[in-house]
Image (cartoon, rainbow, N blue to C red; front, side):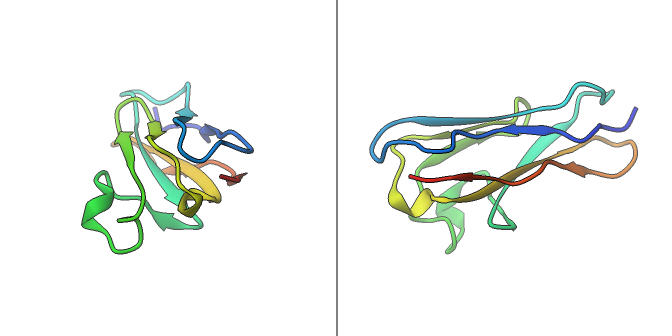
Length: 102
């Protein structure tokens, strides 16, 4: 079963220096989908250090659970976040973007 449109659970504001957890949920996909996150339309790599765009961020991203954890959060992390669910059936589905202000 292809994934349905996922829902991004993004705090509208979060404190710099604290821990912020963003979650992505999707209920219909079988096999269970894997998740990817985007900030301002740019795909977030699993390891931020591998990317010039995200190297100033400290986060961990779990593709299996869809959990994106910033620790600590920096002012650099403000942006519009959306997540994408995909499995090997149908086409990937992307959530609406939600703004988080650090």
